[in-house]
Image (cartoon, rainbow, N blue to C red):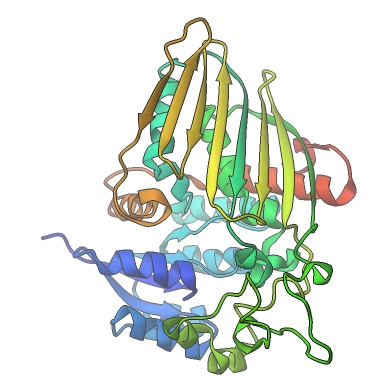
Length: 401
């Protein structure tokens, strides 16, 4: 029997509890000995939901003074990734940061420096690397099935805008922008699939075109104001985009938790203040002339990532939702479609693979393949895209890195 690893989770929201907490709880080689969240109501509710009895903290400093840990998983809002990870590394803990590494390249570089100094693992939660569909796509690219890849795209559809326009994610100050918070996943996948060519320049366009006060999906009644959130909105029966918190979610984000820190998870995504986009396009040019584009929209009724990867021998078309990889050769009609088997688990079976890999990394059984350096590159690409979007210009990667 392996010695149980002592883990702590910092940030007890959806990812911290619904993903990492649940998955760690299913393992017999790990024990969650501590939970930390600035909100005392939420951290207590998280332990109850997970049916565990860890030590509860509202401060990492207090946790560091009392706990001996093997690893920390950080799932706070992005703006807290840097200070939380820095504290963890300085205390000699291995760290998994759920993407992104940081909200800017400068902080990312500082974390890499501290990780090297501490000798501890600093792994990034790029769970898409563990997607069986994308692993299959990576294999056929590496095997030369597509030949020399020269252009690629990913079109991402994310059903409903509430994830990004109702929560903290809608603020640039919390995320560094959605090209970092959301698209770091996707920039990393491009980097990984292509074998990490050097990115040279980035251009992007993005805006809020739908999720604003002028596009409410219902007709207002005289004298009846909508909002401020779905659970308290008088239009919740008419609104097709409503998101009512479940009984379990109310333990984490209900009125009692909101009274502690002012955070509301289901603020009206049409009336909410926001300075991040609800749709956008970004393009990257790499060394050697390789070009990629990323399309994303949060206004739709489906969720999928649809990739097209073109090489000089064949084109691959991929749907994560349908689990299909279709390869069309350049000079023959021998089109093949492979349906990839996936295990159970979030993000198409990718989340369990991410957790299992991190546990092996902590034990020293393997090295991380989603390194802090990879996280820095994805963050830098996102930062360049944010600069491009906001300053209306093409950005050279040398400006960021």
